Length: 149
Image (tube, rainbow, N blue to C red; front, side, top):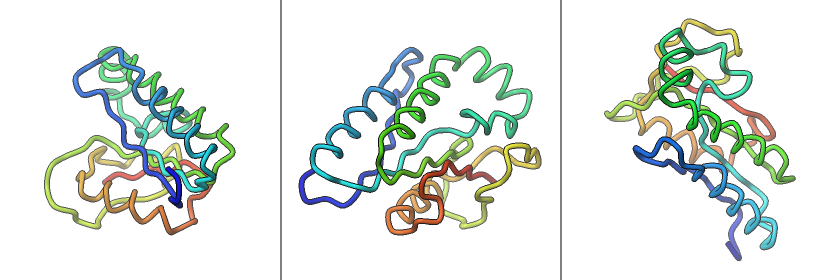
């Protein structure tokens, strides 16, 4: 962390359903940033966390995050709480479900929590590009932003 200006956190637990890698790992990154005066933090979370729950359809609300991935969803929400309380210059990026393929540049950004006209998928390459742009852009500083097709 010394001599850096920013960090991007994109932690995932793979197939582990009860891991707290997102929240615990993000907390470790936050602490290191605070010690070394690294001001900018960009964190990948998930669409459906906190106020973006309304963006999800029945499948995601009841089956995926409601049952199968409930602990994963809780870990994303804890991760976001830690980021908000960090005192850093943060942006939380909430992508919908990842799909493989090239970046398209055609996705919605910053939609309202009640937006329901979403396909709920986005290319990993589009997520990577958006995350990287947030290092220098400040339009979403101090805010969580959803991205999805």
